[in-house]
Length: 505
Image 1 (tube, one colour):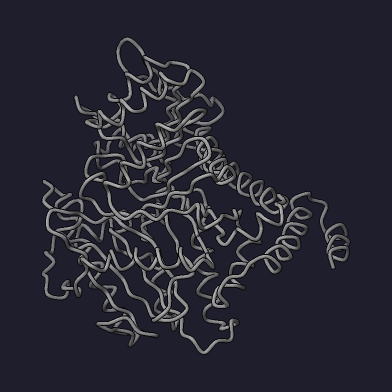
Image 2 (cartoon, rainbow, N blue to C red):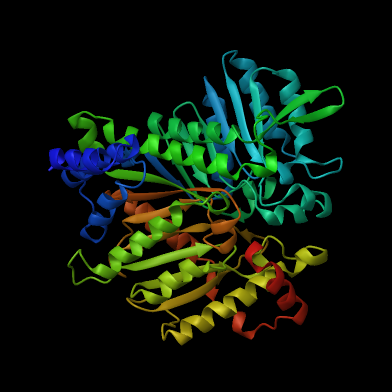
């Protein structure tokens, strides 16, 4: 079969890429059909996804599911303190007042002369003007360790050079941001949706998965960030303060679309080839009861791996190739719930029961903000109303999770805000999850089309890890109540603003 595929490719295509794809798909299908012991509900999906995305086999004992912001922060500091070769952190921004975090980074660099620090942050969010601009807090690191601190600021090309002169700070972030949340050092990495700011360390709920002793996964995350640094600003320290340097003279910062699409596509193709060709011992293969697939979503660069992956998942569930009498159910959450049209259609047209948690208006991070941003929670109420109208039109509403219907709840905890996002899939309403999507995506139109996201699909056969994922769901549902958005009024000016900038929410 492999020889025949080789002959066909050689006959009809002279490109190395086609040949590589042929061997990759064939070998990948062999590997996953013989080594994976996943639930029948997802087995074929995992095999097919391995033909499309890079993959990493992991032992469940090395996967740690955290639940609290304080745990996230403590773990982050410990990851930094354990570093010997490299620290790589990716976030929307680092808060100006995060003195303890900056000091931990500085101490690690002082203790380890061979240690390098790599930061990937968003350009517009990190360069907000004023004395508390986030970029100013990074100057001591640059000045104290000039050649070992590498700071890259990604600028979304959706905002043209002309518009950048017109649109004021804060509002310019509406045209897209760097949104990947990766926190690693050496051979460990923590994936989250949380940023590096006090609220995310104390009372802003998110998700946090820590992978220890995973050199391949850590190398992937580090290489991804290095790849993006190739079309980002570099931050330098001068006597007058931070200076931004654009190193690629072949392309302007607001015209990087073609380069970014090519570079990221080639990066994923290389990683796919590498993950397929890598070999492991029989002992390692037997202990690997988890597989992880990174998926990039960068709509502005025409890279839509997350959309493709979720479309594959729903197509698989609709095909019922797993031939079971069980009815899979899905849990989904987003702190900024406004499903993209593609995702809404997937959910509404499927027969999979779906329990959704959104942030209540008070748990929205913009609640109580001044100016137009104070209308954002109300804007999400409008999007939720529209979604529930579509649910009713599809005859799918339900107040409780079941095999077929869709329920919407809202998360509210006094003094807290909600920022969690992701998907969990269970073979039935009474069984533990076998698959989860986690990372930076909010699963909304903004994530799909404007922001640059890195998320991960994780499948597991480990009963222990499945139980931890179930406890993660239960922890979020603890503070969830039935959706009350239908009782809330949305003012006309909010409707007008959503009509103008709805895709930016």
